[in-house]
Image 1 (spheres, rainbow, N blue to C red):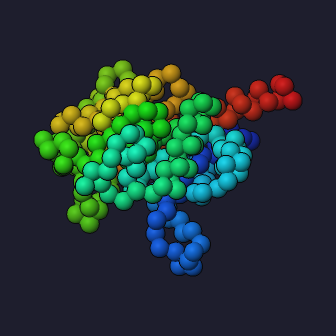
Image 2: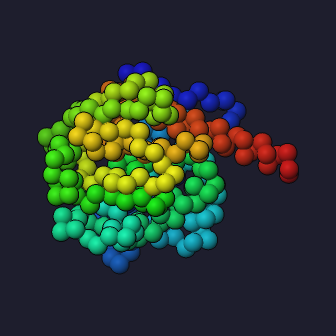
Amino acid sequence: MHQETLVLNPNAHRPLIGIPAAGLEPSPAPPAPYYQFGGYYSTALAASGGLPVIIPLGLPTEALRELFERLDGILFAGGVDVAPAEYGETPHPALGKVDAARDATELTLARWATSADLPTLGICRGIQLINVAAGGSLYQDLAAQLPDAGRHTHKVAETPWERPTHRVRVQVGSRLAQIAGADELMVNSFHHQAVKQPAADFAAVAWADDGVIEGIEDANRRFAVGVQWHPEGMLRTDAAARRLFAAFVAACYERAHIIGANASLHG
């Protein structure tokens, strides 16, 4: 299958793109922390010309900042729910697991990324995380809080990653539509939460047929896009997924070389 990769200058470094790890799993050597990670994200970035690096949770702030300063982009991956306290709500009975350490690390990184205009891609939990970091809110459980919504939660055993399960309408003229090359997409779906109120800096640009927000973007940043589906799981079969990763990596590459050129001029 053809991969739509970024063609890099052979003498240039691939852009370094951070992906915060996930936690909560029992440690084989307690009380040491134990992290997990879904490999499709790093595979998709590498196939698109990026150099992925996993960011551990709970680093001291100065170490996290030093790592952040070396990044050319950041991807926020899927996972457990964002704690509702982070957007001013009390937990709903249908709230799933939350991870305070992950929330703290990712919210900090997302806010730094906004300030630094670091290219950012949010996937599933990631779209929710970047929305909350910017001041938006979430549905804690679609089935309970938006009962007229269609089914968005599937299990991989019944619906493999590469199999689309519903349609998404993309706003004509949006960055996401330009990247995807279409104003309608068929996507996979593995979430029970979703963006409720987009943050002031973000605009909703994609929706499922039931009105659930499936994509947001900040048009004032170099690249700040969140999608509710899992394009990394559709990379081999879906051209729009490949174009999304290629566009993100291209933005990271561009920023890296602009920053590098400015540093050379003032060095």
